[in-house]
Image 1 (cartoon, rainbow, N blue to C red):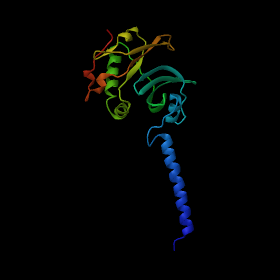
Image 2 (cartoon, rainbow, N blue to C red; image 1 turned 135 degrees about the horizontal axis):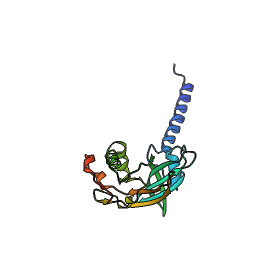
Image 3 (cartoon, rainbow, N blue to C red; image 1 turned 90 degrees about the vertical axis):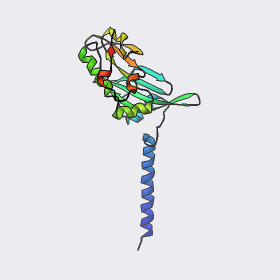
Length: 201
């Protein structure tokens, strides 16, 4: 014989668990992006509050997307690049963070460094990068350099969009952050490393 009282209790308990689960999924953005009034809040939501946003190095906004380069503090300074989609509400901009990359590699006008950059670009044409770029709507490419020739950087004829002076590194060398807002060669399917021409002239 069915115990109606217990059945009702189980149903109520299951409903509460389901409501809590659905609410948690909604808050975390699983059912769709959750927007915040600042990109720092959007970053905290994306990282679960486990990472410090830190010092902002460079911000680039294009249409309804935003990229922020920032370095978290503490004993170990860690570089982050966070990607945001923007939503405009009654004249105000709200943000949702869709991805965070940790660590920024470098490039110098030397054969080994150039080859590494070619392979790095190819590595951004599939997998998680491809899914992120599809959502983001453009394909940025960036890095650090300690050589002044970085101002002349081109990739398959496309000139670098920004070169930002970031001061001295721990070895006393001048450091530059360089940035392509939308690297066109990353839109080419079946890209091979030897298809990529990197120049500092």
